[in-house]
Image (cartoon, rainbow, N blue to C red):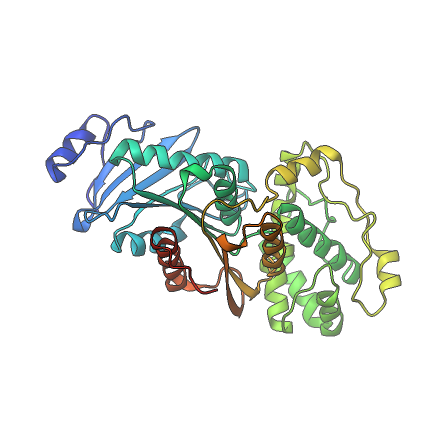
Length: 388
């Protein structure tokens, strides 16, 4: 990669290297252009307090722009461009697609900021390289919710959406799963994790203090672990080995790492409410319902969760979703719920849901993501509806 040339040298570099339209009004103090191998133009800049963006336009551009939204990043990790986007970016750029993505301003459950920063990428790209012929938005996990929210709320900006392994049934459905799992875990394995569903000690080290303790507790009592997984509000379909890794990487990891972040977004108020939940599926539901901790929500916190985001299913463009059947982070059940939401709007003809029969979160591989994007493009531009 050639050295970044910043500031006033940007326009001269583009003109000298490519003889094409010069980017205008690049935003932020880091605005810069690099010349990649094979003539790809790259613009890197900043918007807002600390959000870095990157725009890639291949020399043989097919006219299509892909906006990518990455998943949730624990609030303890510094803001940066997501390194896991590089392979997808390079694969799509090699196929002629322009690609744009952002670090966002903040980590944590930053749906609001993710929507704003991802939407902003389209304008930044148009300023730098001209209007794309078609624009697609895609994202994984929380980034998929961002992509879905953009597609539903800003239909005029996009030609198709590719939400992957995402909480398509809504944030409340996902949060109920995560915090119900913590409440049920505490019933079956009391004291293993410090605190409770809505109280996570600020100095708790998840890797050092939680992961070994959870693994040891589950493996020491496999029967109790599998009973926990069978509770309908948890409902993780997995072997013991998958359950152990799934609980750590999935609901318990997210609950521990994100509770205080979300409380900061809801003014310290509870979004989780299991005061009327009747837990089922255990070997003794009466004992479970008597012994599980109960938490009440407040209207303002519940409203925040609904706003960021409860899909409405009123599609105006093709939407292709991807999901594994045994996803311990975002349950596969989200897909059926979203299909029902879309059907209620009479828009089922604009939704295709692609299923991967395997365990894991976002386990499609690079090839699966690239194929899905190209299938979405063929659907949007040529009317070739993809197979589920």
